[in-house]
Length: 578
Image (cartoon, rainbow, N blue to C red; front, side, top):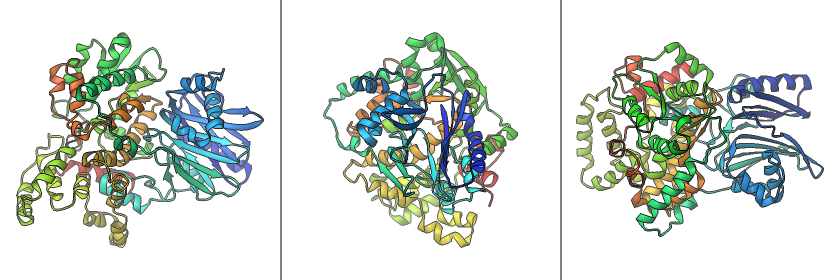
């Protein structure tokens, strides 16, 4: 649990000292126990806020060379690296730096876990920034007015002054509800892509970004295991992953819904930590969004402590404070509930386990069904009939007590019938079409809106894996867009607001690699996971229809319109009014 921020700027020393202190203040909520500033390498300054209670060093001398090493997150295989290098120290900084000396920048591909790393190599005059293979920990940078980096966006105000909205970022946000790497919502600030490292050369002031691992390879290299063996192997790797969480206090939390993924995590860990698990669930009252009753039932089944947080009505003042304190807002209406879960959980624990990644790993999203149906139905419904059918569907009043109304689902599905399969998959993500975005941003941005349409980025990612089976292509694209740029950033901001670290067993690298290599025909509605758990979880969880962790926005704000569009407009006008 850390916040890292720093810069290499040519300015007066006194001003730089003030700037680094102010930058630290913007990220110190990420590490509530220790804050430190390093200024000995002027004009390179770096600040670190940490919740680690260990005495790991940040400033290290090895073979006469000076290094600074900072880690946000954890390296799950550091003990194996320590043993392979025969290093006597247990200091993770020394272990990883020695691995860096042996392997160079290839070391990042040898690390497993959840991390953002900053290394200052004094002899090479390089600042190196790296992110884990899926991008669970964020790291941003700018080259304007010098070079600066940070775990969060607000820190850049000390370098850039008032942050300027990026119109490309706004176009992406209004299109799909989040921004796509490497762009952010702000001009001149970029995010390092997952599975990549950045090198800033202090002498030349050049920036180089290198992808150290291509996760598409895991989908391409299929194994030939029989289905029974797949179930056995997935179960073994998953059980090991669930009990391989980072060091925690005596207790740990589980973010529990009534969904298959979080229930699977709870089931796997309860045997070893039965008396030390705190399950936390959001309740939406009598709304169909509410999962607290079933969550309570599963918590009682495993005899774990359970706390239900009431969110049947929203505290609008608290919601506005949330918008003002977070620097990253997406349209995902589960962000605020996770923020509240983190607030409550952080009062008792320093680590929470989540079910994130289950849908992406095992093909659990409804969109994958729609992709299959789309291919079947496309030749059947001529364009003219599709148009008539769509107009009829839109007359249906969707049930505002449902998580995603029938009319909305059908409209998004039908929009993709007369397009290719890649565009059809993208249409499921679309919130505002180009004409609507022009009306929101202004006619003067019309050309930009069309030129920077997010679908072009989706296309480029599809083109990285043309050899994959169609469903694996969709899953890969979702991992590189929706999951990396929306889900993981949302989870990071909501939890780190209270210095709460999270661990997602489904994102264990061994599990990811194995499931990615499974034939895509088995990645259907999480069938693999259901079959693995059918003798472990109660039947009412296994057979429960997928729900999704969404919130009753219409109930909170008393709206009648499409709640996803409304929520996006709400965030846009409250947070980013032009």
